[in-house]
Image (cartoon, rainbow, N blue to C red):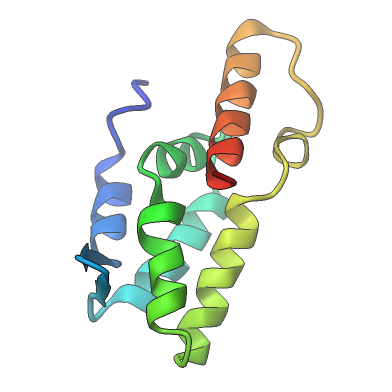
Length: 122
């Protein structure tokens, strides 16, 4: 699978979060449901952590989740759901994979997740 080609369902879910216009983030009406869907996708991802990799490649944390927290901090339900999603997305790669994979393909996925985790901190 080409990690730069996001799954259509995942892309639609990310698009339903909202958009940044200048310094103002505009959430879509289904923003909360989209956050919950992303949490659900992460819960059911495969051993390659494909959902986590696609969300990392899309920079969902930097471009959507952080602006949502800043702009809509008074919406406690949305705030809590976004924090849950961020905690899931930022958990250590070792926790996701259980151990450093031995085979080359799994190690590549591990290192890719690790690189997205490092990018979140920039």
